[in-house]
Length: 129
Image (cartoon, rainbow, N blue to C red; front, side, top):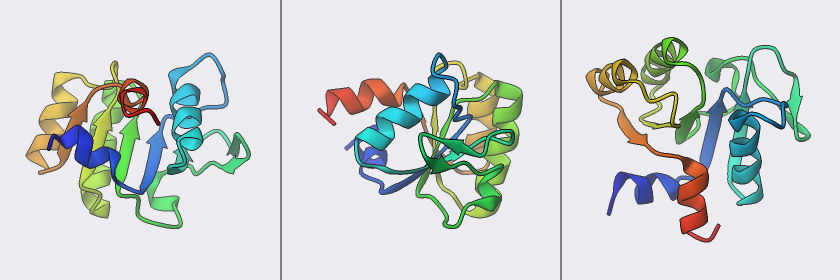
């Protein structure tokens, strides 16, 4: 079974870079995951709520440790997020197109994280979620 299949079975997620701007992928991804029935927490420093869900400034602020983190941020922020995931013991990271720069993948692998590099919206649609 692929890392993609394994990761899509995980129950709790955080979306780093979630936003309430309907034009952006951070919004669309969060909405698709929510509608698929996934327990998902939005992460964005400047926003208090997205689609009626409390938004948290950082992964450290979450009430739970998510099983996986979907990353929708620029690569230089992504590297920092990889380190945060490793510190918090979050093993699974999903890099959206645009967040998946080689240096981010390299940092994640050096930290021993499991990395998926694909669009979660496409993968959820394939599953019929």
